[in-house]
Picture 1 (cartoon, one colour):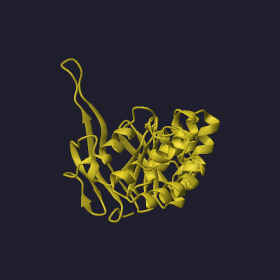
Picture 2: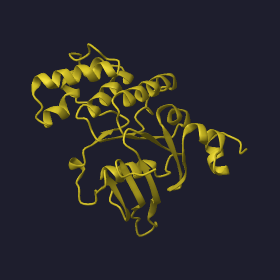
Picture 3: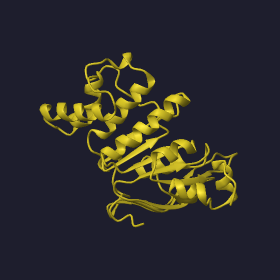
Picture 4: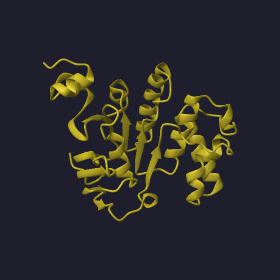
Length: 248
């Protein structure tokens, strides 16, 4: 699959320096992958496998030791985080407590100088997309954990990012709510035709949300495939073990 119109990661290495007593750590070890326009790719693996480090490298939050990240054919090496046109969504949502729901969602639009009437329309559209129609005037403090993450998703989508990066956005929620929100996130990303990279350690969550899943371990990419093909044909014993499958 070509990354010419979407995200292209080529031979990326991310390394964290050590101390005098400890060696450095290679968090991402020569990883290459593509994400096509409109596709949702999950980075799946155990804690410490490098998936969040790879996402942060794509965002520009971690420097590359080697390799390249490009989007729509543009090398991003010299493009700062705020100029990449990417949206970021983290585990805790990081909502602004002094703003109501509507003004949280509208924040990126305000930064872009979008007129007030257009902001209101976009906020209403996105709150409906995430199942929170009519919540614009609600105080953030009155929301449940799941509602806060829905607002955070709407806020991340509001400026129409060309790529949305989601780092374990559901992991702080209980299992039943995570399962419900995973479906809602999938439906919202598809409805908005958003290109996205979704980091998770939960294979059921990855299989629900993503068009394709990239399985990582110890900084390396083990297999990239659709959920159906991963279930049917894991590429190695390690992939099968992590997914709770038996090799055919």
